[in-house]
Amino acid sequence: MAARLLLIEDDASIARFVELALGELPEHDDKAPAIEFTLVRSVAEARAALAAGGWRLVVSDLMLPDGSAEALLTEGFAQADGAPAWVVFSAGVNEERQARLMQHGVARVLCKPVPLAELLDTVAGLLRGAVSAAPAPALPPVADPVRQHFGGDRALYESFRAGCIERFADDLAQGDAATAGADAASLRRVAHGLKAVLELIGQPVLAAQARRLEQEAADWAPGMPWPAGWVALAQGLIDLGAWRHGAH
Image (cartoon, rainbow, N blue to C red; front, side):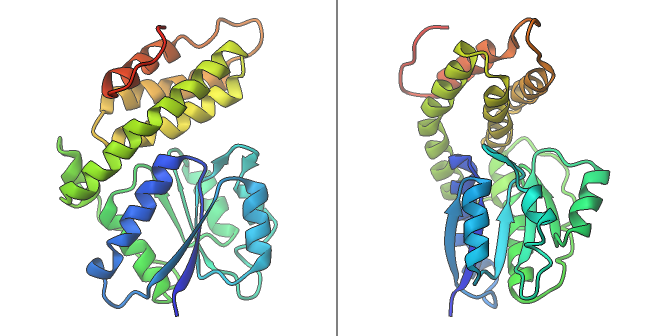
């Protein structure tokens, strides 16, 4: 019987990375069961899916359009009788928050962008019934994102990169709309998703711009100058793509 895995992630590119990665699991670990993969994109959708039950593993981002997935943990979804194992992955979790997540029943906290091998090791270990999968040893940074994040699998990298570039049009539209409406929370979500995606496809400069923009948007308040980082980041996305976008 296939193991049911619930992915809680609103960023389409990161969701695609996880789906592609899990397709590599049988070759990576032949003892891991087959996976039935389900994606939800909000706290509300996740709450309904978790209440229905039947999951073996939950992989969740924290920042979602309607709040933080941490709310689900405080509601006991990782600690109730028969609860699935939980993996949280996020682009920024400090030690204090990581400890709090563990107290609420999270088995592993992974940092975005998570390397392919670490994600596969974690999922395989938890599906085999390990209470907590051991962290993968830290690898030194390398210039080649195929080696660093995709375990040397160039076909997987190229497929993921192509999908990301195709979806940058949506990111640009969302960022433009947030800027036009002075919606700092929405702009922060766009930057939050982009920083891990850009790192995964080997764009560290743009990833750093997204990271700064996320912080600018988080710090913004009415009456302050609008975060200036969106213009440069948007142009960087346009330069990576093969489609046209309105001038900035």
